[in-house]
Length: 482
Image (cartoon, rainbow, N blue to C red; front, side, top):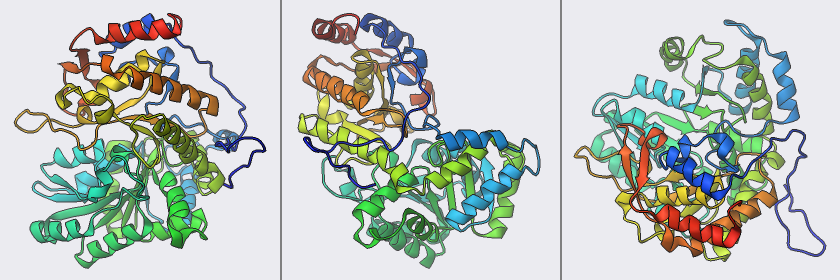
């Protein structure tokens, strides 16, 4: 969207929508938040939503629907088999991506499960620019391994590089030579690499990587869950794409890949998912997994009402004005906090603003989960629920030692069309206060540690009474009712 000019102040991001439905928020008193944090085992996933003031945990399934999305739900064809809603969704996705074969699923990780189940064998290698927690877990549980081949510059937290999600082509060549092309199950490229700050991958890099894979007969897969933000960055940052529409860029990207999957909890603003398979033989080989694990082939575990809303959401994703707001609000948050001296992942990417926890609480050892401590502290000092994206989100090594994350971050997600600029300013204010009092934050240790994806349901405790001391300082500045 064009930048809206102001008469007597610098421009700020503008919401390109008006609010029609609201949900009441409550800011619990500080001491109540402390008790809620203990009850949740210092895991923000286990907090009750009613106890949260600003929920910035994720953008998954919590994006605001438009009026047209909600009205579309009324025409859903509620049939177990042969629903016209499915065929409308299939047609819309074919129009956008140019692939007719659609396998519907209930969400993105179901896509990952089915893809891995069919393609991955013990001892295989899967190439990725960078992993997502579930995309890696589905591969490793089958006895295969993931090679993360993002360029080294992608792991530099503070930079001005426009496409930090780019895969390193020299590393890909070396991996193919080492593993052998026949042992590589597939190459997965993630648009908007989640675990390094929602950083985008360029069209040119995707083209070069997929060309290289095809030279060696390696299947290419795009995780398009965060594609909408990546499309925005391609148009804004890639010189050869500036005159192309979002729809044109989307089709150019899609044409590079054999398989495209997505979580519609992100891409499409709804709650569902899907796998688009170019090769008809592969498509039919994967059909049985849908009926076995998801539901029938024309609903795949989704509500048809959500599917109707998603059809509109897919079309809205082709609107540059619609997809601009998220990246612009994130950029504003990152820029303001960076100017205040708070270590941030720069440049701002998609999905959310990311705090460099390793720099903020550099006194906390990695095995005491600095990002987990910082995200708990942010809830205590503002009622803001973010997400830990660091060592706590990793799996332990086979010998039981911690696998220290390459990047230790706190993610403050910006669900699409949910928060206002004044709420964003509140977040900036509380993060700055917390940064100025960072010496009061201590580490965490597990008291209940699940074996797989522990960050979802694990429970922890503070290694000292640091939460009480932090809250004492907060109440001194803001009062007990804030």
